[in-house]
Image 1 (cartoon, rainbow, N blue to C red):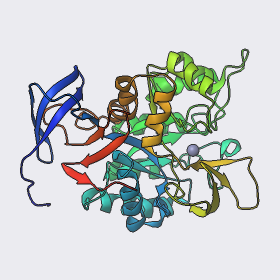
Image 2 (tube, rainbow, N blue to C red):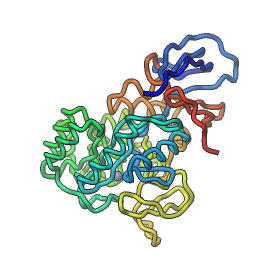
Image 3 (cartoon, rainbow, N blue to C red):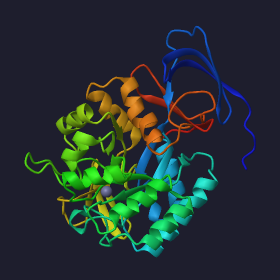
Image 4 (spheres, rainbow, N blue to C red):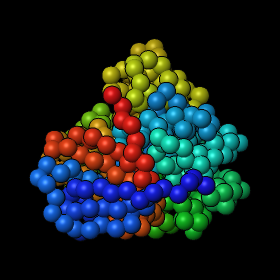
Length: 375
Ligand SMILES: [Zn+2]
């Protein structure tokens, strides 16, 4: 257990579920009180910390490499506004996944200063379509119910990405959902009706909407068509590279709780060059990350995105701060059932992003701890 934190005070304008409240917030690791009162003009605006449900890595580290790598990613993303997150495992043999979950569990149970809080794992694959691997390593398989049950009992995995057209996938979705694990449809060739069945079985969202899924054709609406027609939640990578702005706008109209993820690889926060991704080597060039190092620029391999840039990017599409904040904080927290994250309300964790007048992040607070930002 960490030592108890003494009470601290923040003065400014706070974005709450009821709108902006000016005044003073009292917190230790948690928000204890929010007292409204007058504040000086120019007082900072304070919004909930960002919650990223899809983080394969960051700061040069791949979360498949164990607890130290998870901590490196946790420090990198905290400096960019992420206050809690799900490290995402890649498609791998099941014993390799079990080991990765152990490393993630160690960090989840013992946060160290400077780190964003790990809320559990996102298991992306191995139950995905071999024809829609994207940059996932070549270990896709049909669901193995013994392993599904061990994941359900393990308490580390909070979110699963699965292709519902696989043999046994509907049964697996039902088991995950019954265990309180959120299910996203992704890396899939599923048609509209199969997606509809998967939603009825307990799936509730979509993984990196548009990427690595059957597209919308007007006579074959595919997974994208089903997401736009039926989805309440979906995750999207708003880096301006994975999805064109117009497609983001279409999704914003169609999916009420569209939320942002980074899908950041080890390359996030690092110079151009080669980085590991679960057995693959990926190559960062500018803001993009590609599979392979030999000039193969056909396959995007995760991103180099951080949540501060996702925030700026969505603002640049014309969304207001209140809307963008929900899509980076409350909606993803809600999606995995965490009312105590991603919102400024009494008894929630003291996770904040502090903005200047130009919407630039000047400070990040994780569980009451002020984080030293990147240069
Ligand atoms: Zn993916």
